[in-house]
Image (tube, helix red, strand yellow):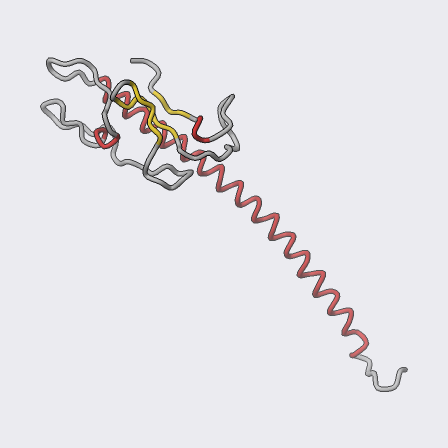
Length: 149
């Protein structure tokens, strides 16, 4: 036995190597977990974009279907008109609340206009969606528009 070395001291290097290996493996596992979590969050935000966009589209369609006495069908001039439609004798709520864009977190949606009225909405994000309709390369191309009327 080497003079000055005790039996426990010779194994100190092995423990240190195992600790480094464990830290490296843990880092790789956490990186993979973070990537999976990031994709799951993006998928969830995309699903929320579809839900909110469809809710707003349906509210615009309902607003447009209301024929006011002595008038023709109209598109809303602003999204807030969907919250309280006072064109008729009774106030109608086509939408309970205006949700922010789940991709940008901003309350301002892109607007698809028909003359001076709103016919649809879209996200202002230029990011690339994970799952989108054919031909959509950016979130801002994913539009929720009333098709008839």
